Length: 435
Image 1 (tube, helix red, strand yellow):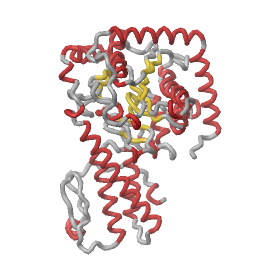
Image 2 (cartoon, rainbow, N blue to C red):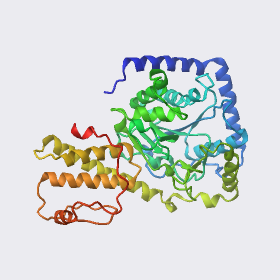
Image 3 (cartoon, rainbow, N blue to C red):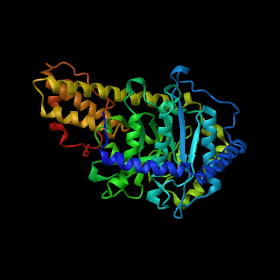
C-alpha cells in the first residue's frame, strides 16, 4: 500500500488542521451560509436556458450502477485578480442549473482558506477544499458516499447540458483509474521530462483513500519542497509533480482537453470550441475576458438550440468509445510485453525500449490518439519479433495509418516508419527500459 513519508503526513496534518479551524470558525460559517443563500436564490431566480423544472437522470447507466457525482468550484479572489461579479455569477449559474438538471450537488468555496492573500497561496485552496470534501464523503457509510468529485474553474460556461459528466468516467475494466484530467498547450516543466502541462480547469477525482493521499501531497508540496519552482499556476505544477511519482502515475489518465475543458483562446494550439461542445474556459484572457464571456452567454441565451445538441448528435459517444478501445489494446500489449520480459528467454533491447515508451505514453499522453497507436504498434511489433521468426506470416499490426504488413515487407522497407508517424517521443524515461 502506498504510504507517504512521515514528513508528508505531519505537514499535511498541520495544514488540514488549520484548514478545518478556518472552515468551521463562526465568522466563516456565517459567510458561507450567506453565500450559499445568495447562490441558491440566484440560481433559482435567474432566467436561464437550463431551467427545465425537472431533474434529468443519467440514461447511460442503470440506477444501481449510476456513479454519484458532486460538482466543486471556487470563487476566491485577491487584489491581483481581474473579476466581474455579475459575469462570474452568470457563468456559475450555468453550472448550478446543470447540477440541478442531472442531480449533481454543487459546492462552491468563496473564502481563501489559506488566509494569506498571495496568488500562489490562494491557488492551494483548490486541493485543500477538494480534500476536505473527499474526507467528508469518506466519513460517511459506503452506501451513502458520492463516488466522484468534478472540479470546474469559475471562469467556465457550461454550454451543453445534454452531456452528463458520467460519460467521461472510466469503464469497469479501468477501475484502477482514480483521476481524469486534460493537458493544455503549455511547455510543462522540461526538467521533469514532460512536454505539456496539466490544466486544472476541469478534472475528475474518485472519492477513495488514494485521492486523500494524493490531495494531501499536492496541498503540502509548497511547504515540503520550497526548493521547487512551481511557477504562476502553482497548483497545476504541484498536481503534475505528484502525478509523476510511482504509486500515483499508474492511476491517472489524460483525456482530450477539448472534450470537457475547451478554451476560448489557445494560440491555435487546441481545437476551437464547436457547437455541441460541453464547456468553454476563459483562462488566460485577462482583460479580453470581459468581451469573450458576454459573447458566449448572450448566444447561449439567445439561441440555445445551436449549442445544446442532444448527446447522440454529437461526436462524444464515438470518440470516447474509441479512446477506451485504444487504451484497452495498449494495455493488453503492455501486459503481454511485460509478461514476456519476465518469463521469456529472447528479450531484446527493442522490446525493452518500446515497452517503456508504451508505458510512458499511457502515463503522459493517453489523450493523443496517434501517439498511443504508434507506441502500441511498435511494442506489438517488437514483441512479435522477440517471440520468434514470423516466417512471413502477417503480424496483424494495423492502425490509423491504414496499412498492414508482413515481416518480409518490413525488412524490404528497411524498417522505415509510416509517413504519417507522429512527432518522436523524446520525453520518455530513458532509464526505464533497462529495469
